[in-house]
Length: 326
Ligand code: ADP
Ligand code: MG
Figure (cartoon, rainbow, N blue to C red):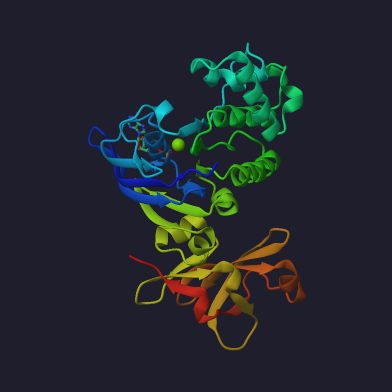
């Protein structure tokens, strides 16, 4: 699909009475990019997605897809397709008929509908299940069917609201790999809502961190993690300490803090040790900076372990700390 699927939100706003659920957000998602809307519950992710889909009207602002204003169009005429959090398949219809359902609504002839459903089921590796009923599939399989169903209308942009949250952790990691693979194969623009930092970092070309109806930062995953713009982003994305060095808040990567038994550094006391497998998390009380966490590779930690109550020195390179916007 080579058509332009650039998605643009222009001062997009949603008010419910006096409450601002989405507060004049501007965003540009390149055609064929995987975008994750990331943020805590209630920050406006689903409302934003529903306004893109047309399931919710915008109070103000615009949604543009492929350079065209789609703000006033009904969902079926936007070039978007939505995969819902609960992927409720019709229980009495076969998998093939479930996938073909929206084409039936559009009046596409049965032979063509089933041919396209077969193509979509092949894409999600579910060909062998075409004649089954939804109740005869596992959660992960039902989810692949839901994905096939949302792709059959050949949307320019696929919108996914917490698509992996109903799956167990193992399946979640596997399915996210499959989502990414399908997105690459089809070259579609994906907008995926999640409250999971791991999921956003693993999937997204563009991570959009939202807080209270606004965008705190929109950047590639490595930039959001490596250089969080605000204190909110640094805390939400995790892996950072937020400290005040006297002239304002600073983020310091937890995995870049050296914990030494002597020498030059910031004096601190070890509060707690948590073994995490590949890494060990060391909770610290620094004399001047307060509570900090250092994350060490297990090999480095156990080569010369420290214990709770022990006095240590902390150090990090200047490039592993950076100032945050107020
Ligand atoms: P998220 O998906 O990030 O958890 P939502 O977009 O669902 O957040 O909600 C954003 C805010 O808008 C929340 O404060 C929520 O309570 C409010 N909200 C969502 N839908 C409605 C509605 N239909 N009526 C009134 N308030 C709503
Ligand atoms: Mg939501």
